[in-house]
Amino acid sequence: MTSQQTTNHPDANLHPVATGPAAHTVAAHTSPAPLTLYAGWFCPFVQRVWLALEEKKIPYQYIEVNPYHKPASLLQLNPRGLVPTLEHDGRPLYESNVVLEFLEDVYPDHAPSFRPSDPYLRARGRIWSDFVTSRIVPSYHRFLQYQPPEGSSAEEAGAGLDRVRKELLGRLKEFAKEMDGEGPWFFGQEPSLVDLVLAPWVVRLWVFDHWKGGLGIPGEGQGGEDEGVWARWRKWAKAVEERKSVRETMSDKEHYMPIYQRYADNKAMSEMAKATREGRPVP
Ligand SMILES: N[C@@H](CCC(=O)N[C@@H](CS)C(=O)NCC(=O)O)C(=O)O
Picture: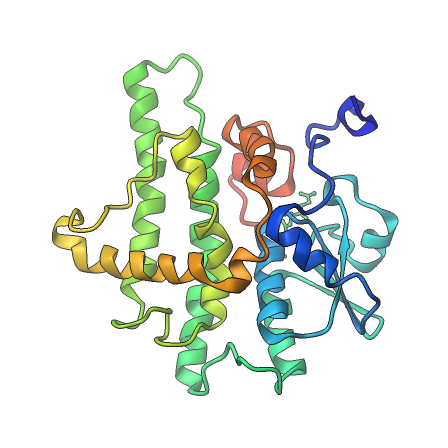
């Protein structure tokens, strides 16, 4: 047993570093740079920012921290003690959506630009990025962490699970309806911030197949009267899954398993897990 496994902290069994494709990306970013990313390899909020850094080829140093054992170095920069946290020219910044906007502002010459030039589309992008954070992510967690109330019959438990499953499905459908008709990205041929904001959860939808009996996104030709919307969703999800930056910021699946197992059992003690249990928004 390692010293990590002997601690009583419920999130102590976290694999310490990135593995698989993400490990190669980390290895390419160990040298000091004007921008430092304090990250957790497993974290979808980190992945949002990591995608932008990789896509835009911004020089950065990657520093792995365990936000469940918050080191002083993290707390000094971010009193919330969450990752991602950024240090840019000695100044700290955090909150993934804020950091994404910051990178667009500070590195305007680093293509691709993830904000459409039309101010109206930019504003719409912000509405739907907010929808991801305030609606989709909480629904994702309500489904993943769902446990039937004590004493529920099998039928009641099944109905409860189905309710949270449909809630998430409904929100993904609502998001897909807003997409440009052709795509493959939200606004058309090129990805934008709103795509980066949801991508990390899309590549983590497998958790529902593994633990919760499936999310039930209709396959090709099975969407009934909503087939057009689901076809659009599938096209978008495929573009996300195939994107180089997405693949290269993912670790080996086996190391996500113990983390998501704790969520699926509703035993995780992260701020997100606690917020979900207490009906609070994303921390
Ligand atoms: N609103 C934050 C959420 C970040 C967040 O919750 N990160 C998690 C890791 S995925 C974290 O640092 N958790 C530490 C904790 O729960 O104490 C953002 O968008 O950056």
